[in-house]
Image (tube, rainbow, N blue to C red; front, side, top):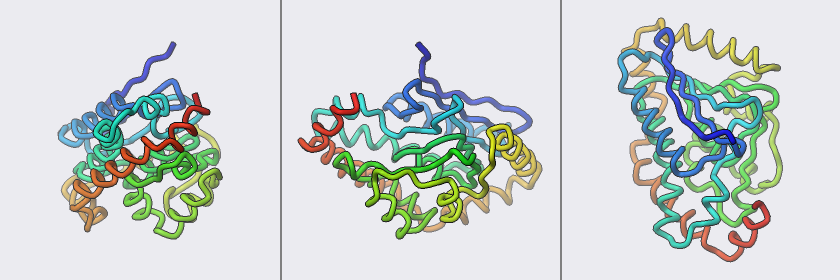
Length: 250
């Protein structure tokens, strides 16, 4: 049985952060915590000029929240703590002083869309369709909404949220601004990510850091906002509707 992991590899001043979970790269609490810490570590490492965020495996980029852990939530405090994991990752990416390039090789669902949106520049393959499925299981994309809306706009976010059972194509994601470029194959994706990362690593790091600040202007209140949103999700996940719905996914 493959085990989950988060690892940081530094090569030519590029920090590659890779996360993996055997269940379609879903996100349990321990992976979320480790990912937050690894992003902070790379951000504070002087040997890293630019960061690439990627997931292991060839298929799903990230399936979002770990349903098995969500099902086990028994009270609002535990619920808020779990969803705060996503808030912490997004805030770590937002506050990281290094630019973060996203490498999305496959489907992104729920929190996976939030991760892609929280990168500063995201590249994907044609197979990287996206879905915000939360409403269909009785909650909503509350924690990731601010970062998704920031990237693709409130209208597109609302469309995806309401049409919760539809996968929207990678071209839709590109048209709305989530992906900067869509490549045909994983090999082409890796080449494009590498070329961009090498180029950025050669630029003035001070200029890159100032650019990062400009990109995230107006989000200083997110430390509080995303935790408030986690509280909403943590409460809704206890509903009979959600518990009954999630049992079907076991």
